[in-house]
Image 1: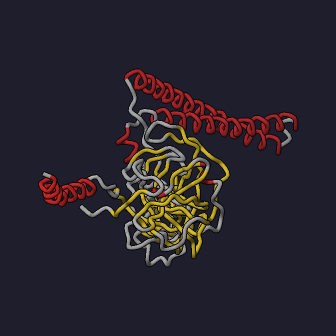
Image 2 (image 1 turned 180 degrees about the vertical axis):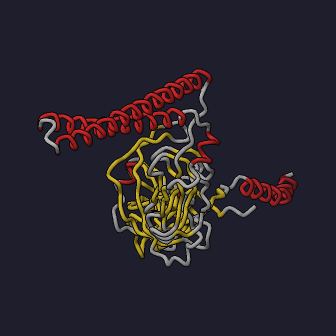
Length: 405
């Protein structure tokens, strides 16, 4: 009986051991699949980036100096102009407006009144001329009598005075006639309609507007013939070779920017990025409402292009660009992805992979940009770290690199 039990134990022992081994293998700790990255050392830049626009630095708006009828502008956007030589526009006196029935009746009555006054002035001239002729004839007769001592000197002086007075009266009547004729012409001018006025002013003097500077036409603001007022903008002129970039930054970002900082201009439409330098940070902020309806304080930052113009020749006024202002940079900086960092109490920490195990390591960080963080101490270049650590990972957990799908 004892021998039978021994034989059974010998027979089932390997099976039990195999079953135990299978259970241990099935319930062994499984490594957590994670994304890994390598701590690297190299160039590191901290930038401030936002959407901006390229624009001509000095834009001149040419306006109409006087009110009048402006002929059609023949210049087109992109045409080159020369200072004080290229004709921009030609202004003529504007034609009168149409009169309504009441205004026409009043104007015709004014013409009739002016015509009657003119005829009255003509009659006054004829009367004054008759008085003058009579006074001159009488003066000649009295001078003949005076030579024979037939009249007194006082009578001769009176005749001369009457002759001079009659001559002055003729001049006065003629001046009154000219005034009445001018009033008559003025009254008739009030009856002119637009077509008659234009035909009467074919040889009028016009005001010619010339380009104030040399450059190119950026935009034509008033192209068609029209009656314009003094100060009406006609077109914009600028020098496409004198280009700058304007970007409006949040005020908290603008305080980190100063003149002389390097700029990389990207998304401008050409290959690579363009180099630039900050020229000015404007001291005045303005309120701008974002696409989400949030009021933001924005500051304009002006950037000069330092690349040769041949590289950005096709960049035009108002074109969209993406400038990145470099506010800090290092040439040999230890850095890790931002997604590898997490808070452990009051410290920043990462999981370093050692022998397929995740080891918690505290680090001291420095500068950071949109994707990476500078590490001052805690890890070394070449070490592998866990990216996007989750709650399944803790100090000592087995990990393995996630396989690509």
